[in-house]
Image (cartoon, rainbow, N blue to C red; front, top):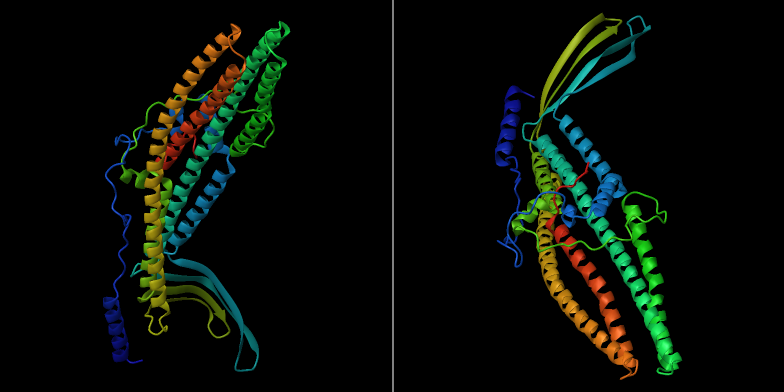
Length: 456
């Protein structure tokens, strides 16, 4: 190729570069839908710092969650994935630097006299792509933000884990509370049965009343085994979540009771979710990584500038032994690939559109999660208040029915009905107080939680 031809090719490459500039990566993407200024319920003050589960002020819960965060195998898997992402990021960053290899070769050379002599070389070889158009830098950026997303995934697993432990813990507490109530109700029914038998023996009552009260006692006692089985299920779940083999040992005290969750905590504003929820942070970082992939695909259509060289010691029949150095600069401009590189750019743009839509949907669902938890807790409080009011009325009704019955002014049926109604409401109150706590856990989970005490 003549000097003029070389110059023409070089100018054509420059024109191609001018027509296709490197891609600018947007590192602050936002959802495609407008962000609301506040939630419909709750205080828009900044969310309190600290481990969210410590807001229940339950030492047993705190210890179990801290143990789970250290020993859980879902967390261990997430940390291993984070390490993998870190090594990929490290490998991508290394691509920016020159590659230096030790090279050696040997062969046979025929001299003029017809004899064969060996010729060999040994030394170092250098190969370096100068990242003139950010192809490598874009790939490095993609790997770095994927690593950040992996770190956010670790926090997502930890958040989900802490919520699962809290849910299992309070479900076990509810079973203990329910069992204590069932045993208390059984004791009360036993005393009533003794009273009915005494009246029957005195000729005041009837055998039917005795049988009715025996049925009431039997019904109450029949509820104990299923509750004990449910307790074991939740205890086993806690074992697995804390990285322990289920061993029939109880991690939740039999005397444990529900925490007083107080009023609604400060919940911040919807835009806080983009920072506080690790799953949204992960999606955002993956979106930025995909934008960087677009940049890498665009840069792949631009010229590649490379430097290569070697420093070798050569020995042969003609030259004897000596050192030789070489250096070469090269520029390669893609010219005809039948649209392959352009298609790769468009594919990466479509992937970005997909991830942006997924990011927006996840944000909308996050707001939905908070709104649902807030409204459910609000209605649940009202429901519990009405159940408690009904429980008080039933207590008064039972006292009145027992008083009339002991005075011999009525049969036993009003007492039995009052007992059954009161028993049902008392057991339902345990379930609904558990649901109130579960709604609070859902709220903390929807808000993204805060610091993870003991997290690696």
